[in-house]
Every structure is written in structure tokens, then in C-alpha cells.
Amino acid sequence: MIPLYITWSPSPEIFSFGSFAVRWYGLLFAGSFFFGYLIMQKFFKKEGVPIRLLDELTTYMIIGTIVGARLGHVFFYEPEWYLSHPMKILAVWEGGLASHGAGIGIVLALMIFSYVRKKPFLWVIDRIVIVVALSGFFIRMGNLMNSEIYGLPTNLPWGFLFMNSTSPEEGLVPRHPTQIYEGLSYLLIFFFLWWYYYKKDGKPAPGFLFGVFLIFVFGIRFLIEFIKEPQVGFERDLTLNMGQLLSIPFVLAGIILVYRALRIKTG
Image (cartoon, rainbow, N blue to C red; front, top):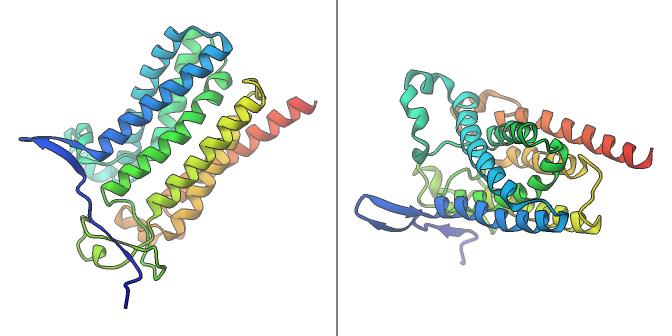
């Protein structure tokens, strides 16, 4: 009888030289910025904005993403442990990044950029979220290669046996490949936002793309969390886990932004 599951056991490392290793997660994370830069470059050229501002914006984005994602994991998921081991907060290479923290970090970084360069915040973030959605796809594929952030046990034929899981007993049971569910969802959101931007000839209503991004990215995240394995122990005692609780305000903010954008457009 053919087993109704997929055995997943890729090495998280692409290659290594002594103690130095190039990992799939790092390559995909870097790739998200590379392709994001190329897409943003087209937007800037289309709208006649100097490319030098994009280079500066990219620096803000990188800092906001990494710092926000790291501190989000530290304070949302394991504050007691990290406050007891403060130097470990800097050990980003050991893992521990939170997408909600990255979202907050990106928003704050873009607010600072907008203030310094006198560019409307909604103009900047409406374009940034298009490439952030694509980045979400790359990052979830990195999680897949790391055999992490997977789902609950399943009997579905596409369940994955995550043989390289850090919890060996969990790797012996077929599980939902929630990294793929989320990654493909983010990819579809990217294509929609990209299409809508060009449909409006690069002039969408201020805040509309940002609002749509928040509604769908965090709405999908909220739903997928129901079949995702808890990331930390205390989540097992919650009706809604930390990822879901953090997603609610983002979705509400998205609804407000879309309503405001449509009201301005039709007003």
C-alpha cells in the first residue's frame, strides 16, 4: 500500500566550508530583498522618483525587518528566557523571528523614512507591501527547508513527515505543511497587489493596497494558525494563540484603511 504522506528531509544547508555554511533560509531571505529591490525600482522609475531614495529606503527596510522580527520573537514569545539571557537576543543566526514583529518594525522604519525624506507615508507603504507579500513567500519557503513552523497532524495525502524536525517524535507523524499554505497565499496576494497597482497606472487610492495587504495576509495567518503547531509551550493553554491575537489588530487596521480609501475615492 502506498503511504499517504510525503517524506521531507532536505538539509537546511546548501553547502559549507569548515564552520561557515550557506543555508537555504538565509539565501531565500536575501533573495526576498533582491527581488523586492528590482520590483520597487520599476515602481520608482514609472513614477519618476530618484533611485537614490530607493537605496536609502532599502536600508531602512532591512534594519526595520531584522530588528522588528527579532524583538517581536523575544518579547511576544519568550520574554522571560531572553531577559534572563540578554546576549542571546543578538544571536539572530540561532533562529527566532516573528512576522508580526517584522510588520511593526517595517511600519516604524517607513514612518521614520517618510518623515526624513518628506514622502507621504501611505505612498511609501502602499508600494512596499507589494514586495513584502513576495518576501513572505520566500521566508515561508525558508521555513519549509528548515523543517520548522509546521502544522498539526493530518491524514491528508499531502501531509509531510518532517524528518529533520527539532522534535524527533513530531517528525514521525504526517503534518500539515503550513509553510506551503502560507507561502502560496502570500504569493497570490503579491500577484493581486502587483496587478492592481498597474491596473490603476501606479496611482491607487492612498492606503488601499496597505489595507488589502493587512486584511488578507493577517486574515490568512489567523486561519492557518488553527492547524499550526504552537511555537512555544504557553500557547497550548490559549484559546487563540499568540499569532492569532497579534493578527486581529492588523486585520482591523486594514479594514479601516480600505474603508477610508474607498470613501475618499467615492467622496
